[in-house]
Length: 430
Ligand SMILES: NC(=O)c1ccc[n+]([C@@H]2O[C@H](COP(=O)([O-])OP(=O)(O)OC[C@H]3O[C@@H](n4cnc5c(N)ncnc54)[C@H](OP(=O)(O)O)[C@@H]3O)[C@@H](O)[C@H]2O)c1
Image 1 (spheres, protein in one colour):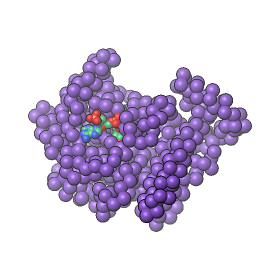
Image 2 (image 1 turned 180 degrees about the vertical axis):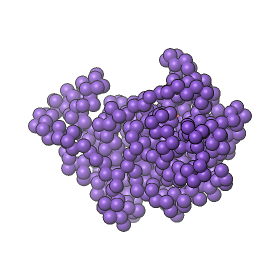
Image 3 (image 1 turned 45 degrees about the horizontal axis):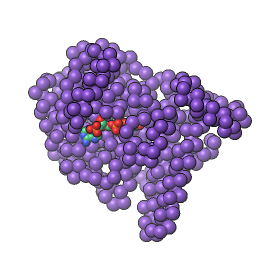
């Protein structure tokens, strides 16, 4: 079992960008899988739990009924590894078969398979970590009466739970979304669930259109003169090739570039809200997929040999680079704003609708985090007083976590920042 987990590691580190690094440099985010815990337990119980299929089935049945005991069951965790590997190998066979018919596309098929395996590896690892770290994944919800927050993508998925928790903090929450009636329904449901504190407003934004982002900011400024919390959450994943209104690959445009512009346009209002004692906060919802990312400056839209997983990883790494760069800028300019990136965990939402997991939704509901669990580290970054003034972190399960070393590369941060300024036609004059 352990060998199966480790095998794809070689593949993972053979990306074109990381190939030149030494092993030690490549992997400072040494996922320290606590061997004394999970592995040790698996070894000691291997004869009973891993070899007996009936005990596995029993564990999974119990998992469906009992949330707490599920998390501690080695057999259920074993399933976490087994199922994706099975799906993955099925797809591999299909793709390799296809490649036999298309000999001139072998390089593309190889890259596709490698990316696919790497994703499965990173996802499985994170699912296990999410379970092992479950008890750290919590935040207090302080009273923040009078504070104003913006949550992009707040009408669906993890965003709904972020809105709910911020309302519990008595914050005035502006849901920034493209479907206003869906947002109104979301608010009605939250109110029905018993949350009466906080205020809400819905303002339209389409993250696939930079003009719409500008219009959102203009509308926001009509109602508010300051902003305390900005949660850049809206996102798409593994979509087929398509371009935003402004001609950028969809995932790059929606996940990263629109939020880049939104944040810079809102800096004056964030700056106004922050004080020496209490900073205003920007939360960029990134992903563990950033670990697989690279920035293709020579082909930012990934038009040559488009592999959707690579484009998603690039967009999530871009959010990390932006977080780090912004943290430095705010500190240099002494602005009372902190900015952090968050990985919500692997969460059962519609985000996976373009992946093969779409066909395994019931399973993802068993093994993945719930939207509430996914929203928790985001809200932690947005309100938790214990991280006051801390900036530039990558938060996973409410803890500062290791990142792709590329995100710490200052020249990369600057290069992407300058490119994004050009792409959004904005000056960073704050
Ligand atoms: N779920 C996970 O396992 C996971 C893991 C790591 C990171 N994340 C990140 O977490 C964030 C939220 O994901 P989720 O799981 O909640 O996904 P989701 O359920 O699919 O929700 C995505 C949200 O983004 C909004 N959105 C998408 N395209 C938009 C656009 N062009 N303009 C405005 N809003 C748009 C959607 O609004 P509509 O209703 O209008 O479509 C929706 O509210 C994403 O940034 C994602 O990358 C999720």
